[in-house]
Image 1 (cartoon, helix red, strand yellow):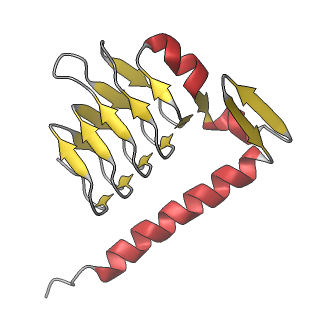
Image 2: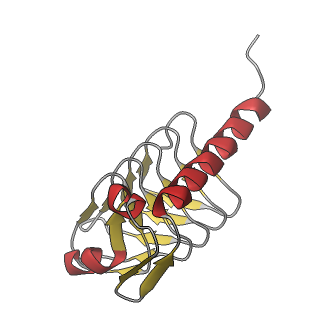
Length: 148
């Protein structure tokens, strides 16, 4: 089920999953056996491969970066308002492949977590990313036919 105001772009597959309102799934995103919280983004070519007995739950306001793979053997829950990247199979992987957006906003120069290096101002990245998501959703809403 896809919630109101959500956007699933071309070549996206959503199977046995729920996306709350105002979610964006970018080109070629694959979401299987997952629950995606409101106003979350699933990036290009991401593969959220939950199982019937090991569902993936992504909290509200999350950003799943392009090419991220979530392929758990047990149910996984990622809290709201997190940046997510890389390859996640277990709860331990969440520690090295996610960061709270509030913590990222505090970054002023360089942040290294696992194999990920972020350079720049975290707050600027988050603000620009969220602005782009708003533009995508606004464009979608303007292109929908009006009910008469």
